[in-house]
Image 1 (spheres, each protein chain N blue to C red):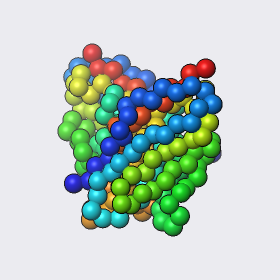
Image 2: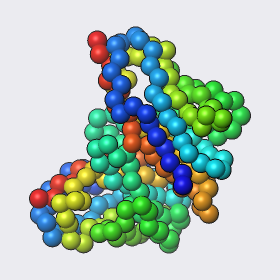
Image 3: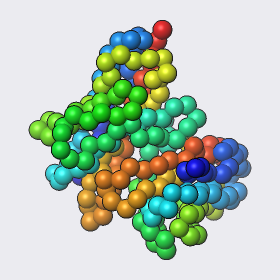
Image 4: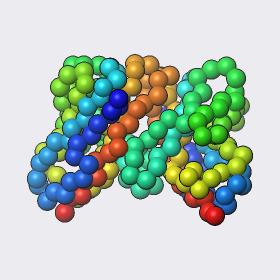
Length: 114
Length: 113
């Protein structure tokens, strides 16, 4: 069965420090991969997506993610975070199971401290 | 361009009451979804509609019904609300295809006493 695991439920980090939010997935077939961000009292917004091609994908707000097929991972990174990056981040996988199905991870709460 | 609009934004119900959550999208998307979000559990799919006129159960459909009224609108109904249905409900829409991202509304925060 397909699954998405976000390895950290909370990540505290100081402003201007680098951050990595980890995501691993389980699937025996090809997948499409997404990262979404959710600010307080809002819905999810797309940060970036991996469909095919280059394994390093860049998204909005300076975030990037790297697809690693052998490790079935899609970790999100930012070299220098801002207070405004404080939010919850969701990794999602879209997989074909007779129709496309999207599975979301449980989320990682990023807390940026001054 | 409003995107995905959900109403109401907040609601408090008593156990046993019924209500309908409304969702409309203006992006001409074929697919629409209803999720619930609970702490530490991410988003769980309640129902989805791949296209106008079709609906299918998701991961947690018990206690809910849906109606795809037309291409723009997809409503979620709680017939007899229970405290376990206290949650934040999100509607989303997308183009058809697994490579298409979903677009979310701002949610309905529902409390059932």
